Length: 161
Image 1 (cartoon, rainbow, N blue to C red):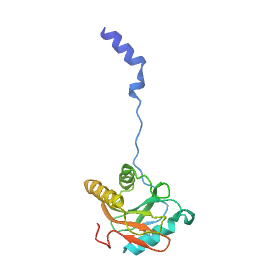
Image 2 (image 1 turned 60 degrees about the vertical axis):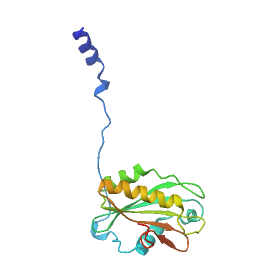
Image 3 (image 1 turned 180 degrees about the vertical axis):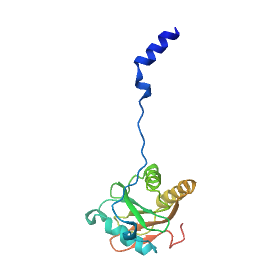
Image 4 (image 1 turned 30 degrees about the vertical axis):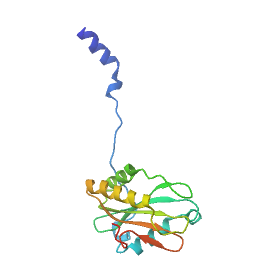
């Protein structure tokens, strides 16, 4: 019986095959050339510059700005693009991106196609949940910025973070 089990295991090596996970962050911008964030207004301007203007007032999108310890921009992740009033935010992808880039902090951002800068209850709840998850991972959430065609709303400037 023991010999038969060993022969079966030797023939079926599929149990040895597993997916390989590689943690790598590749960049093409020298650290000295990366913008450094010093205010919500500056972060909003950089984020707005990454938005497809044809979508800014059409569909809601969610992005994450990844920051180094010195608040230099490591990258901006376009996390999701949804409909005219909402988009799905998979929080795991935020954490994965931040960890993979070895980010010290992040800034959350989404647009309101309606032009209304006031955060919804869902916006506030999502922000609290992400802040809590990031805290567990040792990542700071510096701000959550709502972008419109004409302006921005900063959770930090308005005491919501």
